[in-house]
Length: 502
Image 1 (tube, rainbow, N blue to C red):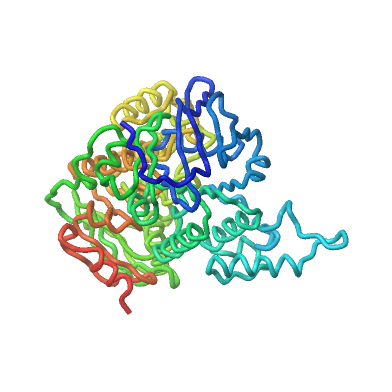
Image 2 (image 1 turned 30 degrees about the vertical axis):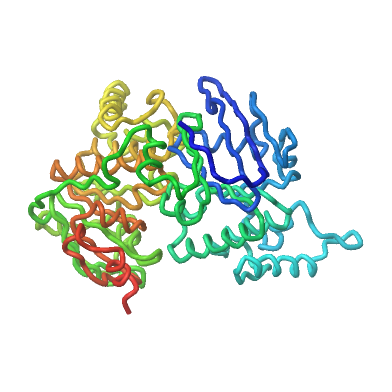
């Protein structure tokens, strides 16, 4: 049942009964949403729910098969991104559409340069860029190349570009996925400022806490249909999750009690330059050791040293009491260590290869038949793993790049399980995946722990670290600032205090 919003404000945007089908799949089955002037509308749903297709229809990238789009009450057709932009619509995708080697100013006015006497008026562009950045509360040199800006600054350039084109509707797709908490707070402040100025925002995010902090209303999609709509103040988090996944989740973090066994991994004095400095800890069998810290604290760099992706300057690594020399990932894999990387698309998968090929890549020795690969044995192993992990693929031949974030993560996990790893390093395991897929990843972590596997869980989401860990290490500037023995009884404030400790 779809709840009705309370607002009686005039509608700036109406999308009615939008239908869009692709070969073999009906992505949108009559989706509707409305957006008022000066409103932040959260658009949420699991991966594959239809959010991206709907936004591409609004942005002119997809022409709906049927349905109606109205702006200011007038029916419009949006056959191209250019026409959509002329209607005052700007889409800021998770992957920015900036030219890295061009300056912030050049990106701002690309295709709509300020011209004087037949030449680009750089002075006028610099002045206007400065005004826009000041309006957004950011200090950015307009002549700095975008490749030299931080992710948050690049995002500000994208927002400023939307304002420069007189956008009335700005769509933000997972805008905080790669931001630190301070940068998230800054972005939310910018969004409030835009809302106060009468600009309407469609905010897409898997982070529900942000939805409750910034949105006025929420629209929920599931399987290409609108299944829920309400003012944010009138829907609880559990109700929102139930709308998204189609079933109640009893608890957000289904942590199971464990009885850790002997020390499996011992790290002493691990160091590399200034990124990792004297890190020491122990990880036991059947235990989840969380690693927290602000962006840049050295968490990922530490994980890469343990996995052999980078060479360490100092330190020792022991596995089950025996010192091991790990100079490259091959050594780590041989010693039962695996790394689920922070960026699964760039480092964890070969997107143009099939799910089965990605699964088999680190396990080729197991499928060798003479000098050839036994494709039948590989296919049978992948099919068994697919069933166990509930990986949603049309077949093993489906390209990894075509899978949702949650299913990509499961493919990465499946290849390490096939190799019978004992130590799993999860670096941001739920980044960019929906709440239902997150829950499944948590259940998989529980299952690994129940089998006596050791988990090093690195995450920027404090509730996740606290909710799924037995103990927590807190890092800052490459050093361990403290250890929390009982994760379940601690608070976010305690963890943050250690992360900010001088």
